[in-house]
Length: 283
Image 1: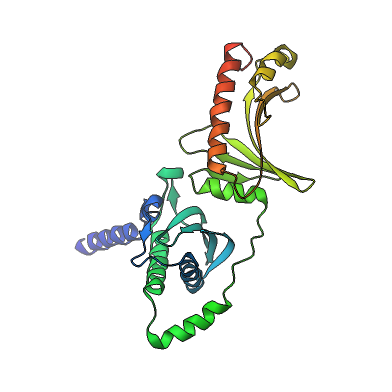
Image 2: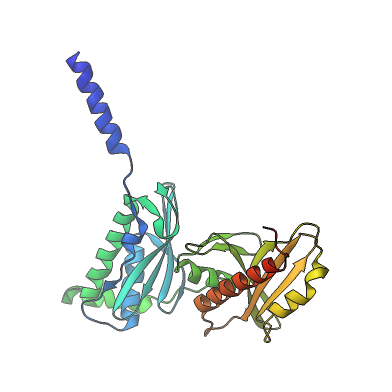
């Protein structure tokens, strides 16, 4: 009887040990200060080499931002690394094969993710601290061959990656992305339209039209909601019984993606409230 109880107790202990421990993903996003501020190019090289050492594949890159993926044994981690000459930080983007719970700022994920990030930090810090004299030449020769990875992302993917660093949860569809802001259940779609050498980014949100009230009743209301520069418009489609709220901006290096996304969310909320007040939106 004692043997049976002991075996049962050990089985419980072993089973408990097999349960993955979940930790907040945000615990791994704190900025890491660089002890001796360095040129941004040196910080980049330290990060690129460390990613390679830990078997991460660099997917895309732009100044101060690297997107990378780790795949092994049915598990995948996708992260962003933001850096400057004085600090760097990791951002969780996506994962597969890891136990997780919640989303956005409340995401909990398998502690193995944190161990992987901890190993990356150790590699980066060691490289930034500098190799010994005998290793310096070898590292310098390797670094001379390091070139920025070619960025093959579309303009839309660039926008979505920036939103992901701000906590947006984005899912790719055939010709667009559906992005849900943190602490806001109303999703918006992101798409891009290249035409005559200019790419326009579209942020779109939708509200359901009131039953048995055709769109032509609200032509004056939707016209009044449009901005003079046409960056924000509201339209109604009887075929899908919905109002569409659209923000259109020209893509370029100076585009403040986060600010325009917030502007869209503010204007769609205002438009929704005004249309509710005239009985145009289904409650």
